[in-house]
Image (cartoon, rainbow, N blue to C red; front, side):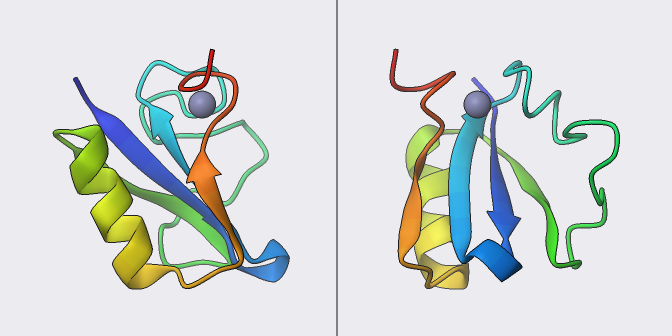
Amino acid sequence: MTFYVFHATPMKRARVHYHSCKHCRDGQGQENQDKNGSGATGWDGPFNSRKEAEDFMARHYRFEDVGCCKYCLES
Ligand SMILES: [Zn+2]
């Protein structure tokens, strides 16, 4: 089980994704996205568990809108 955290600083949003999610693609995201994890948007990971990813997100991204991807983790 591998998870990634996506952040979008301008939108104050962060999400945990499962690695195979179509929005995540093992941390590569969608084609026109900034793939650099230090940019305004980007990916952190991989994490070995959902909890590890959620803990990282809570520590690093103090946004109002944080949670899990509705596509891959809340079905
Ligand atoms: Zn997802």
